Image 1 (cartoon, rainbow, N blue to C red):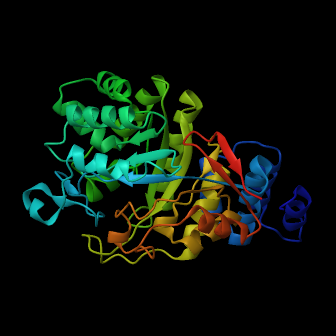
Image 2: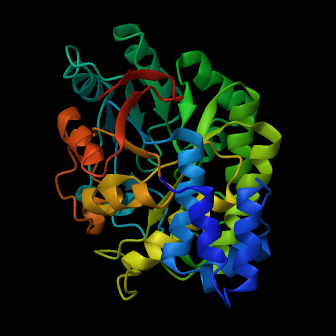
Length: 378
């Protein structure tokens, strides 16, 4: 446990950096840090110091509790009309013979595989396919809800939603309401990437911009739906871009209180148009997670998505502010394995996930999508 006394001992050593000491005192007194403070943390904070602050916040909220859920993914297609330079997953629509396209019947077959398994959530995301429109996905949602009413339906990035709504000639509120009525309950956080328009112009110019992403999530929140938020880091962005991204999320969370958690996503460089860029180090991963926990004071949860980081690195992040490891997944996502993640077969049983958490003296807690506790594991 990181105590207040331990942090005070750390910052009261002779000649300790005055800016870092001021930030630590803000954390201990629950005073919001500024964007300038966040930049100081990125540039001057050693990982031991960052870890002490981030872990203090994490344990102040949850002690040793570490959350996960039982979930599986449906990825309707990797055929996409967009061409994001960082993406290893999608195949352009004009070259769609290299991709897959699932019918509603095929997706329902995936759902039915879990009929006697105690999963609580299905996560539906994929490429933007022009033939998979709003009506198509509303029908899928209705069929899943009819078959398994208690399964939480979390689906569609803001990129997918923006395309669906524009194609259907509906406002974002009209489109979101239609999906909610069909059974959609919450949104994942994908598609946020980095909000800086100049960065987006280089990595994902043709899809919904940062303001649009925020507005779609705000619309969902206004309809009583929760969502997650992500940030793609470790490519061409600077520390200032990461901080600006998180600050826009923090500002909106002040207004809507609709985000469940924040998920930093590491850029992976295999088989994409940015493969010439080296991946950032584990030290940089640690700094990003720790600063996120310190800066995003109004986000309840910080998640390390283990299929992307790898299970051992995700486990390490439990000492740097992370309190959630996502779920069991069951080899039902290809988004990061195709990009070169260590997890080429992204599946863990509940027992394996619990053991991973226990191995670093944390307590596994099964949750539902909106963080209601289902079961605590000793």
